Image (tube, rainbow, N blue to C red; front, side, top):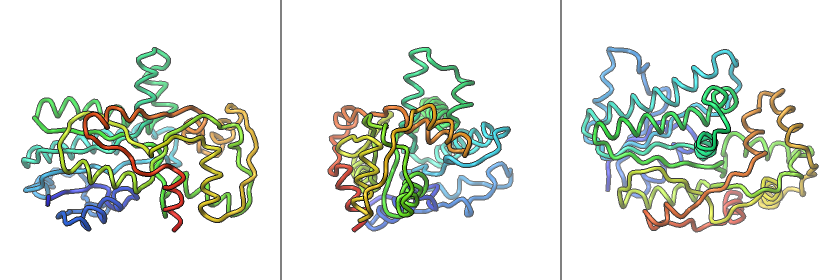
Length: 299
């Protein structure tokens, strides 16, 4: 059994991992946002809480929220870049050997666009501050890991769904329960999703072996947002939703007006995950299809 510290334990993924790993017999120290003092405070010797920990899982993050566009980049950078780097520094100083950073598959999409010369860093920060903050954090953590000898693993997650999952999944159920039409009829491109059960299963596997690097995980299959909505309604025993085909530009325009621009841009583009690297390096493969994961969420 292992001594593990999890940041962001009050969030959906952090809380699920805390309960899951503790139930497996690991000694888990759970840190929530309210339990963490201001890390800019020079009087805080945060390294004390990392002593004797074998692994730190950094699940704390600022996700898609309704911030003032004037300071949104600074907020994402502070919480999703500066803070994980600070936590990794304290962990290394305390002698922690393994650090797992929970990232986003959105970082993979941006990375591909940079390689293709299709986007600049400033434009990425303006359009996709969450994704960009995760990608920049990955890069800075990699530099720090090389310098400090910390074994760093970054896990890129797609949209995670499950019982009581916040964000897009809860919003989708909210709209369907009210019988509102959804603009997903034209979103037929395959996308990766991950059940919270898939995430927990991967982490159980990860603890049994160390493997630094950047990896992405998902459910066993990939389905379209349209099919996801239909399967979610079926699993929740709701009437099939009314789906209308909305052009991506109109979906993006309407969502941006409602401060959901990042979510809309994400839904309107293909997002596929190659499981080859994680299968080759870890010998892990997901057990659940997305349909099975949705049924399990509503048991």
